[in-house]
Amino acid sequence: MIRELAAFSCLLLVSACGPTEPSASAQVSSTAPADQYAASACAQVARVIEEQDVRFTSNSGIVMRAVKATDPGVREAGQRLALVTKEAGDLFVKNDPGVDLGPTNARMAEAQRGLLLACTDLFGAQPWPFAEKPSPATSN
Image 1 (cartoon, one colour):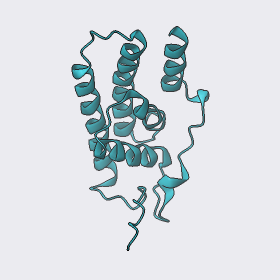
Image 2 (cartoon, helix red, strand yellow; image 1 turned 180 degrees about the vertical axis):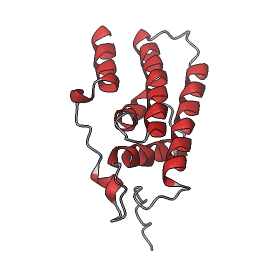
Image 3 (cartoon, helix red, strand yellow; image 1 turned 90 degrees about the vertical axis):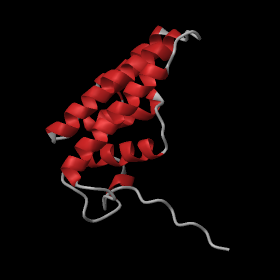
Image 4 (cartoon, helix red, strand yellow; image 1 turned 30 degrees about the horizontal axis):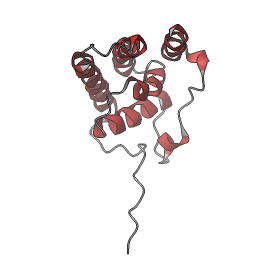
């Protein structure tokens, strides 16, 4: 369990632990913004919020990108999300069935919304032209 926590902390706090380049999916449009880290983090957090996903593992990639953003608002919101994500990871590693995850999940959702607000301040209202578009539905 200590290894899992150390590996997760490494993902959150040290950018050299894995690939952190923004994904190609964040660059769908030729109007991609100059701050690719912010754009990628914003596209991902919007998707995670839409899916109502508060699992700490869903936030690690978002955090790694947001803390590298040049925009201070996105970067600070990413740092807040990193703290809550680490707290949730610590609870997961403890694996205590008696722990109430509700408060942690609520803080996670709040931190995600804070990052989305910083993204809206930077890029304007959604939909963003650089965000990943859903695949077209197949017709019969």
